Image 1 (cartoon, rainbow, N blue to C red):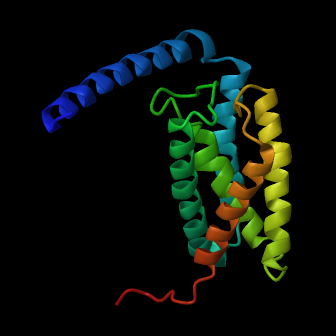
Image 2 (image 1 turned 180 degrees about the vertical axis):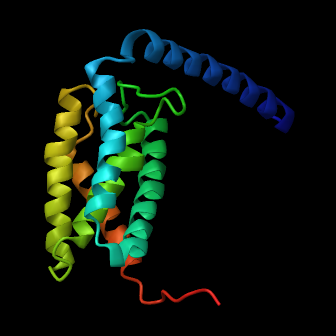
Image 3 (image 1 turned 60 degrees about the vertical axis):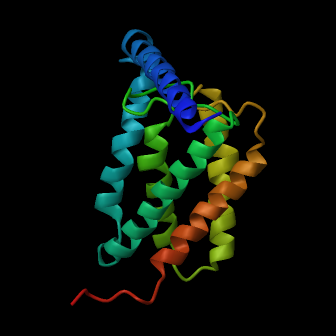
Length: 185
């Protein structure tokens, strides 16, 4: 295939993606919007941040947010790879902005849960905290999401989710504990 043929094929794929996006939009607007599942998704997007802003350790806000941002970046990256390989999907679509991703998970639940885990008992062994956090997130959280059709693992083992959450936790732990924080001068 030549470069020009590749460009044409890429444009055809983009047209199909626009068609798929339109199908997602139609699904949200005619099947999901204002259902209890949709309201739950909206709530899961907003409430964790409200709780975090009121309950966070204010003196550690910057460090915790850095951990939250690395969680967002890594969780989206992992999800995009897994979704493109068809390893799992998110059947419940909350918004048409990014219909393939479950935005409440990426932008609220995962980062806020990890930020809370980081600030609770900060002197505890991070390995133990990471294992506890990952076990709860994978074996409880993801199974509940599967049960209410927010997540379709398509045969993906929850045991693998455990290691994904462990990776997310440790990445956030590492960046939030960097000693190189100093004001830019």
